[in-house]
Image 1 (spheres, rainbow, N blue to C red):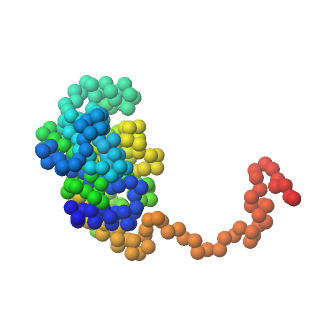
Image 2: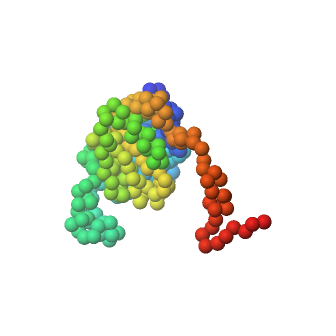
Image 3: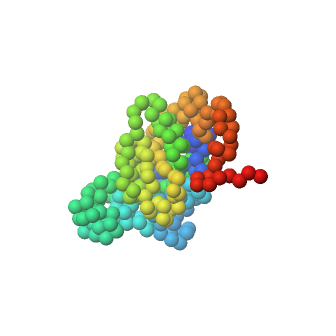
Length: 265
């Protein structure tokens, strides 16, 4: 695991995300869940959504695992292949919540979701990358737009190709992010969905970057190479210029409030 942990430390060095990067493993057999991984029902006595478990991992630094028995989210239950979602029920949900204007639009939403075939996944494990207990399939990083820009620089350093993603505001991190990166084997920029904000505390300033583990070395290498040339985070603002305050106008003119005058002592 040391190689993955070291790459996680390099992510910390170059972009310093506010929370842990999350290593994610999709398991065909739940017997492969590592010892010591906490479970929502067994250890916390609640069912949870994938985004909640991701949040516990990234904020607490816990290794978490979940199966169908731990899940409290119908949408990700469907996309991860754990539940069959009748079209009628899903379409009713999307139209009732005004996610879709009509049944035609609702059906298009349902058909647009990235999904795993039933039987392909019995469990998902989440572990903080810097001390991961698993060899990840996908890495999920919550970050601000400037940090996201740097990650895109890193991932495109070798290929020169832009990152292609889709954005719906629904099932963002769990489906557009994790499953999108896993199935396409390419990085994904993610806008956290409403569920991630309501139940998993994603903040207004947070974006997400999901990358397949096969891309992690290239990401770190790209971050390193661009960092060497001064393209860094925190962004180094250019400050070597002479300010004009007080040189061409009196300060009272520059800072005079709208519709009034500054009183003179």
